[in-house]
Image 1 (cartoon, each protein chain N blue to C red):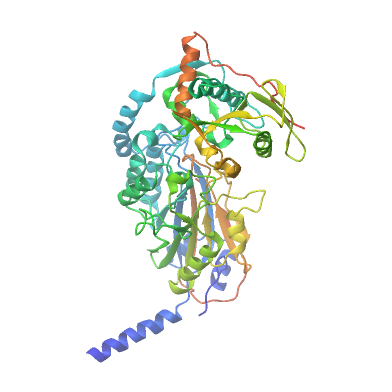
Image 2: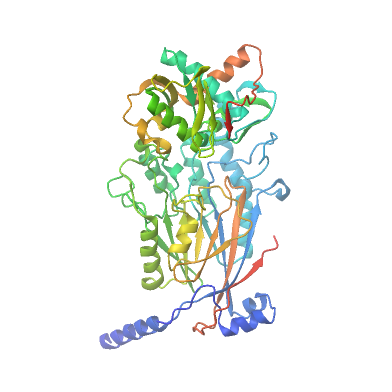
Length: 308
Length: 248
């Protein structure tokens, strides 16, 4: 199999970009396909914008506002995915009073495609999480939590494959160690397994068995730590077959996605958009639609800011 | 028919196995801030939210106390951290029905980075402490007390009342005083904290075997009661840093 590598471009596309052409013409010509990935992390039940009370994030965020921005993007773009990296729950009285019902309902309305489990998504207990998973019109994906002896059995998926146009996208998730972070009675018999081993296992399946063009990991490990604790940075460097890691947990605001070399020297993108729905992340991928053959051109993917 | 069907499937499989994946040739990215300047919101979603909000706000908009300043959570010591841990220490004596030496809160357990100036509502108390953590007391020997202080120092300084210490260069707690007296390793100390910490949260595994003196009172309810007490005395929330935790 002649697998094309992520963040490489075919000679035709290279020539196109080399001429300085933004891919709009190529899009129009049907040579490139644009896939828009929208993403959030650590929404923390912030249903309404932060109140205007003089604090740091006053006036920012809000589900109804985000829904409108997403609606406008969907009206403009043909291929859109909406993803979340966990910690949907906990942080405003909405969660204390409604236990996640409203968050899931509004995420259904916004047509989220997938999320993963953050440590705070255990905060209402496993039965509550199982109930919310049932209510969600989108899957919760995680590849390193063993849930066979919990109410999440049969509900939590390791991954899901999406098809947008001719592009196959594999989405899986990894979660943080619960011990010491989540009260034991909340995560019950959920088993924490090594995220790296399981990320490699699933990414390999998605790339080689499921033949995905793009492999996305929804991670709630956290961006990076000043100790050896596993993080998105560690995950990016020590795995293969992942193209994009959408992170969370550390509430880190990235100015732009970071690029790392993975375990086989290929580029992987990492992004995280703070918390509380203050930002909506957007990454547009342009796929070489016409020239599907590997050409051996190793020049890196071009990064262009979106004028929003 | 049947035979050609098989051939057709075989041809498809052959095609599939030869197909190379598509490759992204370019990406572009934006972080879209959800700000006031966008002005737009989805009216349908706003309508969905409204009954939830109305019901919640009826309960949560109750003003507990007024704050004279913005109070901020910081390491190694902060006005907000001092305020909450002082309330915890005082209420721990009430609900524990005994003398309590030290009250501590894990830094991540206070979920609002700032408490605003002006009215402090029940809703903000929930945002400060959304978890249903219960107050427990632990009686620790000198060795475990030192270990706990070292962990507080190692974390960079967490909200604390009833004690003072210095974070040494190697991130240990030194020059500890408890209830105004130098730390005595031969003494036992009563510590007020959340059941989350007492059960080994934040990797405080050494606390797990210690018998817990339970109070059955939520930390959040303690803060709410503390705020109401201050209001009932006709006072406003105020708090200062007093150098109880410093770094060497």
